[in-house]
Length: 320
Image 1 (cartoon, rainbow, N blue to C red):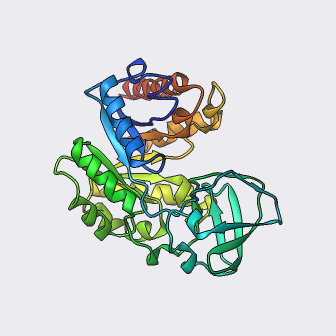
Image 2: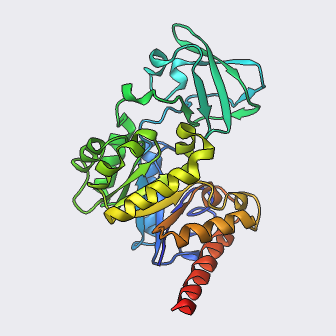
Image 3: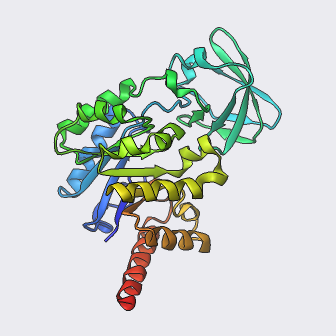
């Protein structure tokens, strides 16, 4: 039976109580990138009050550069400039690493910016996209992270929470090498399983070494696409799955599994086909994110996952 990682938020765990949808193969994910450490502790307490026996995953935000302290969303216009100050990023030294001409893939590659100018305490960007840039959105520049520490201050605070509440899973974001996992394992309890998130090109290049020290990986197709290009995701995804299976490591898959259902009651045919295909490849589980954390159709999303699980199980029985 597949595992399903379900991201909690205003919808799941809030408007829709855990016990309204709970099954034994569900893992409840708290995205450490959203909310303060105190907010996340309160979420843990709330979830455990709803159901003491659930499995929880704390997903560390890791060293992903994000927008911060924006009083209001920034309106983006194609070809127009906008400015972000050094204190409007979650990593204060980010500005020292940026140079004119660099391309920035923001909000899981929904937006593309070019660095126009770097001043003492601010960066001028030219937007190649239109929309609203919100707080806590990723600002990714390829090949920049070698100069950024693996864990930020918030990660250390969340690791303490993980140990305090005996959380069974912790997500290691933006892993790049085996040593990153070893550093994290030294800080978490013996009973906490580390899920190494494969979302950087460096992690793919060091995959054999990473697979030696974990039992689980999660392929984050959103962040990985910002590094390698969205057109390469199917090929890289297959490569990672095959490597993991060869090493006996279980694979979770994330990003846009049922994206259409964030605002619509039904999935697209392409999403159903993707669920079927990845299940037939021996994926251990899938993760739903915005679809159920902030989406309007939580129960319908769960129904789709279970429907497809039953369909595949029935097919396997028929083929025996």
